[in-house]
Length: 287
Length: 343
Image (cartoon, rainbow over all chains, first blue to last red; front, side, top):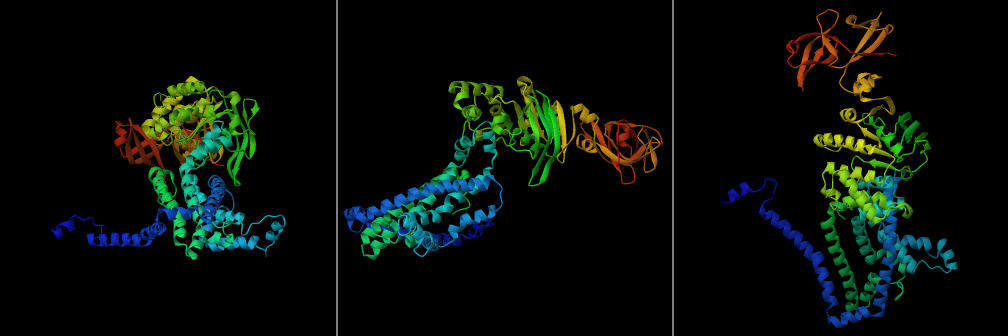
């Protein structure tokens, strides 16, 4: 019987025992490092009941952190959409010197530690710099204020949209745009009616990842924020502050919101990949 | 609308793609730009369209200088090799696009746009597919949509870039015939690019044969086929054999031996070109003779490759049932031929 089944097994396939072993190891790893922490977050958040959970989310500091996070994302994500589309357009549709360098530069925020990204702004706008005191004399605060947080977030999340769009637009070429122009459309009409619809799902995918990172960024923001309670603490920073102050429920309640954001992002991302896989450059390449 | 291309030169990164090209296209004619890849034919088409700007020279539409005009202002219809249909729009929306994007002052009312788009879909025999998307059509159907879309803006000139290049042989032949019919019906001045000589010979009123960024010859299919003006055209259009010969007192000789034809060209060396079917079998010493290397049936004739000595090989056509086709030694001389003196 065993000999027979060995005969029927595909020649490139491993024996069943090895297959089960690998699957088991994979699942155990997933459970230990991903499922368990997520469950822990929610169980800690609800440990003292729904009432306490609800109350800690209505705490003034938590409310201000949520508002700040939403505001930062609302500024950083649209700006990165505009920058990302511009950069990908330039790279995909034109030939110019320094193109390869620009592509490398776009990837820089991915390869630099977020703490360094934050420190760059401290160096640029800190009290020891040239720019910082000059701006301060006009009453403009960058560091330890909202503008600094926004700048650091933009820097860290810049690659998401551009990296998704560049291969997609390179792949599509400029045939459709030329066709639109030859039919009498203006550059603006061509962009809105032809280019944008062609990249819409890729763009949405990039926006989704960009937003998740913008809301969840800790390192870069921690350096520039100054952690002024109720003013410059975003959700991830507030979670840490609550936790350090032994307010477990408050910390995990806020963390549960971030976890939910992650889960929603994951579901939407999967749905996009499933439905529009052929129109996404990221599919198969992975992130 | 007549189109005049005047001394146009085009360089890409200082690499010349077109050298000083001039071409007059008559109103209402169907002209083919024919040449191998890299000959500059697509560049010339894109220059006429305004998708590229000439490095030097001018392009006139009628009496109006179009050189400085944008592609939108030129009002041309362009059909791309890979269709470039807008994938997120239905067929009807694709065809309507050119009218929809017009400024309010010249844009027809919505109902009128729909009516005209339907009319064009009828012309290209695609009625009933209005609500489909490009991905749901076959290649041939897509190219017909692309043509309808280009015609919708009532272009002054219709430009087609290898329109049938991506289609299979059967569909190509059908669309070729159909394009000729559409042209005869609508009367647009039409320029199309192709590397397929059969397509060009069959479809076009005139051919413009190009090579290495230059125009080699312009003329009707008959002229170009029967009296090629350069060795390139002779070699590129139709089948031909070339032999290096010398001319001595009007006598054409190959390797010192007379081949039985004479010329009024002055003494010197030259290339002798002739087509496989332009030969006659004779019984004479003063002729070309060779033994059969390969022999294959091509339609109603037999194409025979002969080794005529001195490492020269030529191809000739014989009736497939001709007894000479079976012989190993064949004696012949060209009946029609052209000499291109070496310089």
